[in-house]
Amino acid sequence: MAKYQQYAEYKASGVPWLGQVPTHWGDKPLKYLCTYNDEVLPDSTSKELELEYVDIGSVSSTEGITNTENMVFENAPSRAKRIVQDGDVIVSTVRTYLEAIAPINNPPKNMIVSTGFAVIRPSEYLYKGYAAYCLRAKGFIKEVVSLSVGVSYPAINATDLVSIKIPSLPFNEQIIIGEFLDHETAQIDTLIDKQQTLIQLS
Image (cartoon, rainbow, N blue to C red; front, side, top):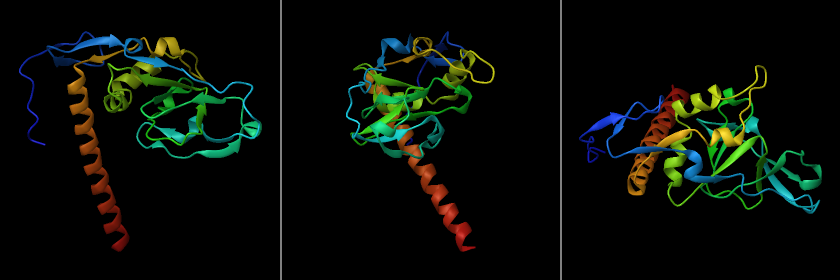
């Protein structure tokens, strides 16, 4: 990946968790780069509709969605309402310290997530692959946690969540960054798999 060169000049971003950024980058509140909580299942939904449900306990910022539950709408919890599509990022707005954040990649048509998530849907100005990493950055997560209210059950309002600023940069650079991080992540996963295989053989 040596073809990627360092930027010539940097500046202070003005956003505490970002630090130095290339001079041509800006920052914008997330709400100007996405929509959120666009679709929910209506109360008129058929009781027999089969759902693949994702709850907060089944999501990790490092591992993604680790488990889903199959159920019919009639037996689903009342919080099983938010509709997701490919490219969305789900961010837990309750118990934010758990860091339950994950990108949605090629989900089944019947996937539904808890209303405890804010469903972030990138606009044409935000590349989904870049958003997937940006919203799982440690600095972004710290901002989410710091803006949460409550001690035993800290939560953040979705409108406050999308007011957090993120780096705003040209779309083509977002694609490059997203693809670079995909490549690096895949290499790390391959190394981990090899190490686990060696451990099992030893």
